[in-house]
Length: 176
Ligand SMILES: Cc1cc2nc3c(=O)[nH]c(=O)nc-3n(C[C@H](O)[C@H](O)[C@H](O)COP(=O)(O)O)c2cc1C
Image (cartoon, rainbow, N blue to C red; front, side, top):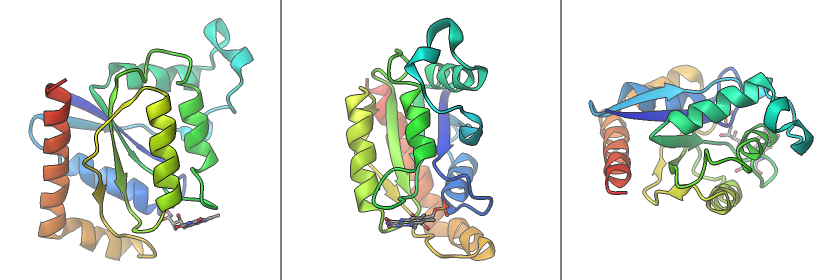
């Protein structure tokens, strides 16, 4: 059994990225368990002075969750052609640790746009030594209302796409 940790980069209550990671958790292959990490909004802004013994508890919770996971799934919106501050802040708490080093990761996308944020996020995560799987998944949920989002995510083709993307990610993890 592989334990995967999913993180949405959006704090919005009706977030399409959060809906996508929730759907991935529901549609994971039997060999994978997906836990969703909440609480990016509770993290203090990263300060290198607050590492080591001074690490805030919410940052430790994130670091421990990433360390324990066999792989990480990230779904993230784009704000002003960049990675939202909340997710970048969370990643910053992981930089000077071992948690991200060689940790398999996959990016999934709820918007067909967000090309700047995708590229920036991949660059950040490669710089942090995540082992980034190149089989990304995109399900277009941009601008959809919650009921529509759930209808799209419940469609047979998308259920299969989510299952297959995580199966391929699981193979990538096992092959390492
Ligand atoms: C402040 C703000 C800035 C945005 N900037 C961009 C942008 O530069 N490029 C883009 O493709 N979408 C942009 N968007 C749209 C969001 O990326 C898009 O709505 C995203 O899918 C929302 O994700 P969520 O539903 O998980 O919150 C922006 C949205 C907001 C609120």
